[in-house]
Image (cartoon, rainbow, N blue to C red; front, side):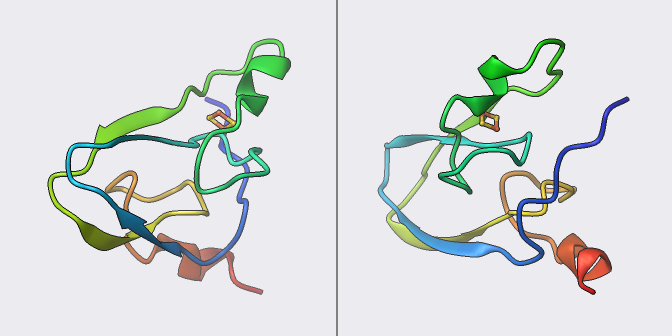
Length: 84
Ligand code: FES
């Protein structure tokens, strides 16, 4: 299984709006991380697709940028293992 690219070893705080749907990048190659910019479509054999989620409330959330979280799309601290 191919591993996602580590975009950044820290999460991004994002304000989400209740009822709005977001597309979180799972491949790590988007230039608009933590969100998908369609880059995954440009690579043959790419096993990753964006994870769409709908915000349940207006809130600030921490979205994963290392793409290895066990609680996608949210940061679970896994990025610590990628810090140099
Ligand atoms: S660019 Fe990464 S999932 Fe779309």
